[in-house]
Image 1 (cartoon, rainbow over the protein chains, first blue to last red):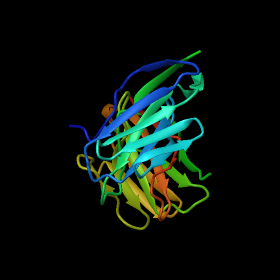
Image 2: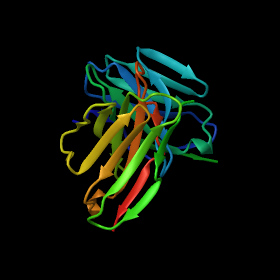
Image 3: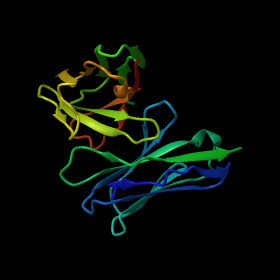
Length: 111
Length: 116
């Protein structure tokens, strides 16, 4: 089992819709969770971080964490074509310095 | 926001030669730097963690004699790919973290290495 799993996609949504991206992780002791956006040929940029159960909102983005289910998601409201990218879920477990990345979900927002 | 500058952004080299990649934190002190490698359609794989003034910690399966990492100052880390081979062709990305910061929020632009 991979440490961090994501559906590779592509996830296709029309402009203006809500895009829902999901991620599961295997280390039950994980404490820190992050969503990064990566455009093709570019390095990742941090979108959201979340550390406790529940929802965290930042503009059009909402991160949701459920530690009991070992599940973290990212919702993008009012999706725009410029949101088309690969979204990487990253998790830091207990006692570790490093982040473990999922393989990413490719999002395509059509005009 | 904080800026991490990585150079060069792309490089083509002949098989058997060495290539040095630089990663600089421009406006903060990077006590820890991380080097990742990303193959096409794959995720970022951590190669090594570098703390200023000490030897890098390499991940399992990464040859420390092939991928030389130097973190001589709080603003500069270098990765040297020695005796490069075509299978080393990849996208190399560094990230930097300040003391007490919880995440590698600041990534360099990445270096596309092609070994011919």
